[in-house]
Image 1 (tube, rainbow, N blue to C red):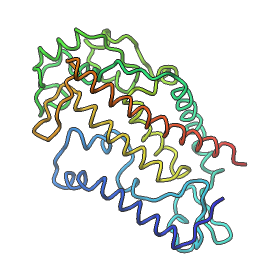
Image 2 (image 1 turned 135 degrees about the vertical axis):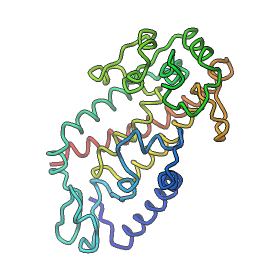
Image 3 (image 1 turned 180 degrees about the vertical axis):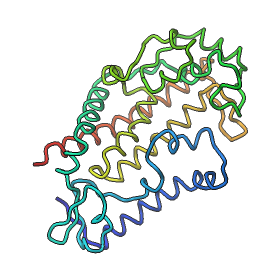
Image 4 (image 1 turned 120 degrees about the horizontal axis):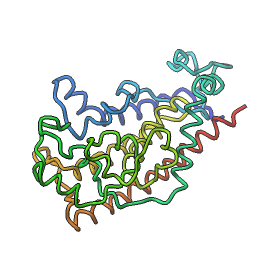
Amino acid sequence: MQVLDEPEWRERTAAHEARVDSATAAHLARRRDHRKHPVEDFLFTYYSFKPAQLRRWHPGAETALGGAAQAPHTDWRFYAEEAGRVHVDVEAFTAARGDTLRFVRELLVRTAGRPARFGCFGLHEWAMVYRLDPSDVRHSGWPLRLGATGTDAVVESHQVACSHFDAYRFFTPAAQPLNALAPTRETQTALEQPGCLHAGMDLYKWAHKLVPAVSSDIVMDCFELARDIRALDMRAAPYDLRELGWEPVRIETAEGKAEYAAAQRGFSVRGQVLRERLITGCDRILQTP
């Protein structure tokens, strides 16, 4: 196990806190002012990890901190002190979170092993508003670029092929039968694939569920990937967000489809790297005596 002396872990803590502060400042300012942002608030409202939790620096299960008496980790859950060092108590973590750990590992391994598919073109967001009354649309404060009729026509003129349950479950009742698949929670490990934007965003969820056994560095790397994916997700959505500075990816056109698929391929590559890092982290935890 790597041991960091006090000056080094304090330096890493400060760097992490600065990184998180930069990433969360705008959201926290909006929250204080009771304002909402349809793109940038998603990671803080959809996922359960709060900014204060994200700001806590964790070294991960392979690193101990010298000068334990000075480290706040001594009082945090799933940490143990030994010989003046504080480290993650892997045994306690596995006893409490073992089922989650094994599920996450299985999902990540099976997803990583499948070929990526890039033909969905973000139609899940369109299926979430298909044939809805405008007042029932989730982001009803923002107009639909093509109007309700034009939005419905895009859905009806494409093959909708969403493989991600947590996107599919928000489809309107009229849109669900149009999907080529019928994902369920039970079939999640059988259907998720690495080209899916939501599978890429969810790497952040799986990372924070493994805290503190995985390091804050990988959690933030997953956060930043999810943030970037969310931007594409909403730029390709049916909403007109140009007033917020978000230019649309017009997936109803050939050019928009090409733009979307190219970005999706890049996110898939980034996601696979992070997926492998998380799998390695799971394996190390599970193999620790």
